[in-house]
Image (cartoon, rainbow, N blue to C red; front, side):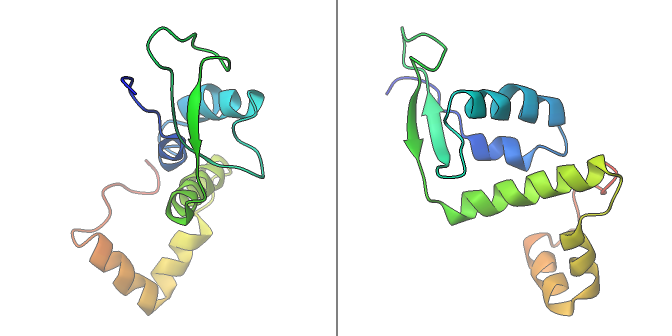
Amino acid sequence: MGAPAITPHYAGLIASLRPAEATEIMWNWLIANGLSTPLNNVESLMFPPGAPCDSSGVVWSHGKLSWNLALQTLGWGRYLAQRQEQVPVLWQATLKNSMLQEGYRLLAPNGPASTLAD
């Protein structure tokens, strides 16, 4: 449609690294404008050329995307745990469960890209 696309699930992925941008800029706007509710998930959105950069000009695609929802949940879960100075429960499980350890090793053969303190 001739405009850059915004993918809100990315804000969930980076929430623990850039919480202000993820919450104050992306998610607060989506919620305030009715694009993120318990009943829908925005897959992508854009503002076509010439359209106002507010809710009247947005064009969006909804999605029932389990992978995107899973990634959002993991990112926000890590952010919320770190905000409380806790180690995320899924990370704890990965450290204790051999099947999860093997899955993590397959996804990240060189180990974590960052520490949980990042």
